[in-house]
Amino acid sequence: MKETPYDSEDLLQQLLQDYPALLTGDQINREQPRKWLLITREMGVPDTEGGKDRWALDHLFLDQDGIPTLVEVKRSTDTRTRREVVAQMLDYAANSVQYWSIDDIIRSFTYTSEKAEKDPGEILGTFLFNTENPDEYWERVQANLRRGNIRLLFVADTIPAELKRIIEFLNEQMNPAEVLGVEVKQYTGRQDKNKTLVSRVVGQTMKAIDTKKIRSGAPKLWDRESFVQQLRERAAPGDAEVVEKIFNWCNSNGFALKFGRGVDQATVRIGLDIPDKGFHQIVLLEGYGDLAFFFGILGKYFQFFKENEARIQLLHQLNAECGFTFNPGKIDSYSYSPISTFSDERRVSAFLSKLEWLRTVIAQEHQKD
Image (cartoon, rainbow, N blue to C red; front, side, top):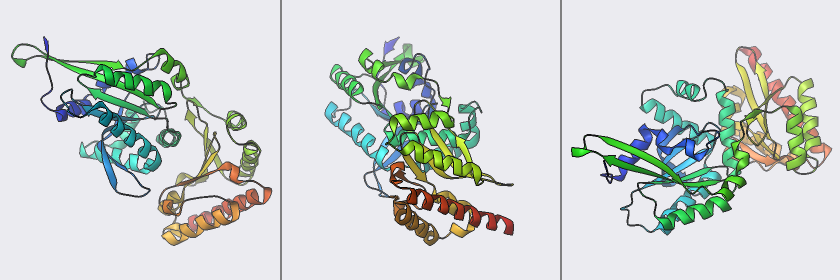
């Protein structure tokens, strides 16, 4: 068999879509080989908050740890310089972690699944072996995106030595992000009747592997003790004590705590278990010291918050009374603010009072149903 160039870049892109295993997850992580969930081809990347897409990434995949994996495909015959290719990928990376939301990713995944006439829930369940709650998985994706815990893959039939050196350098310097190249060579037999594809990862160095060892651990289920301990180690002084107060209050006032599963960052969802409707998340706390408020869930499931004005008013009240810095442009999804916002007892009390008010509003609405 002889090595044969691809007829087009689109052919290589289609092969990756149809056979994600070509990204050779066992070479990327030999201890825990990566599995791939295709989110979409041509994933839009904006360059401003709420703006239109400026670029289109060739492929977006997720692995089993919820790490967004950005794939850019180039043939060796591409005349652009390696500088252009690398600069383009860095544009994608810098803007995706800043402007993508988990809602964007879920929407794209749903579209891709339905376009293939498949059920997105079944695809995700199979990918997760039905052992993990999908909501918890999407939370891990969200947390990875916020931390810049992403993977950049340059895919080509041949990766020249100059690009390989750049990939190795970036992979050693960037943390937690990972930067690798994947060569996917095509070999054909006589009259092109037989075809073999062979993948090889480039860019792994011992220095990079040592730097990113934390990513190799198996996801664990966090609990109250480990969550608070991570806050003490990784978050601002005083965050752990504030969160302990929030936990104690939630346990005494009908709010459920759902601890997440992850490799390195602890998460806990705070919400309400509503009879016949299940758990509805309102707040997410992260072990590195951030808090997210889910305005979009309130608007989606509760009539009181269907109108934008009700959610905007709630956001402004939280910012004014509790010191948060929630973004008014995020009332259809969620917005983050540091836990360290709670600089005094008054702000903590104001936040808990707002949660109590929400519980009352939701309970009254449920009684009417």
